[in-house]
Length: 134
Image 1 (cartoon, rainbow, N blue to C red):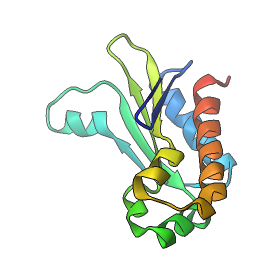
Image 2 (image 1 turned 90 degrees about the vertical axis):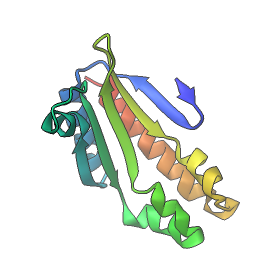
Image 3 (image 1 turned 45 degrees about the horizontal axis):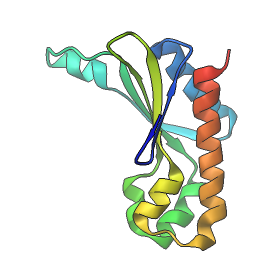
């Protein structure tokens, strides 16, 4: 599924395992997990129910900084993010914004296409490996 720059992949694993796999893939590729937001836990804390929904924010300053140096508003979309969520039927999904779409959104020039391509490749590899790997 790809909708307006949002890529969504069905996971072969449950939410907890998928989140663990995303974290492991990020770290294996030399990136840093900056934050993990458990939206379901937040909802439970105020007496509301939400199916498992976890946002992971991660990246590399070496990759992201050139984009922000070019167009500083790119910082609103960085670091990279992956949302692991469970639908009403119990299926687990991995969703993320395509860095190429983010580049267009902020008007990043073609001189940074190699950086954007590298981010796109890494993010896709993390998501697919976590969702589809063993």
